[in-house]
Length: 190
Image 1: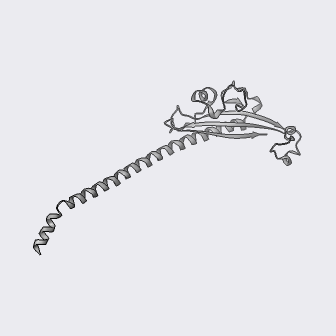
Image 2: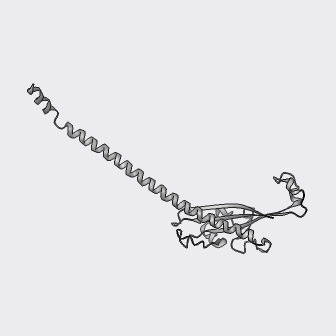
């Protein structure tokens, strides 16, 4: 019996070493995959934070632009494009500027209003911008035309109704300037 046990032991030399090396290799692969996954999750979390900062800055600037329309007599505002932040409807054909959503950094700097919101997380250079476009003035007679999606019932009892529509567009950047959020709202003022 001892002779067979000695013969078996001599045949199995090195098998434990190979199995051990394979186990170490598998553990290394699993560890590297975990490190890679953690790095990817940190990158995604950082990008989401940057995107959220840009969105919050754009939203704050959008509220400032809407307040400009709400709080002022818009008849006294010059929407010819001569005043920064006040433009005519740029989606109309033949305009000197492209639509706001296609603006470059230089066009935002030249034609929009930068709002100092005191947002410390994004720095002074990346404070948000806004621009207000005058879309149209809709009178009661224009609402009587066919094909419009206007609530006729609410307009029947008014004789001198004028509705002014404005598009407020804001742009916010993150602290690094790599993430951008552009928000638009259509605002109606009676």
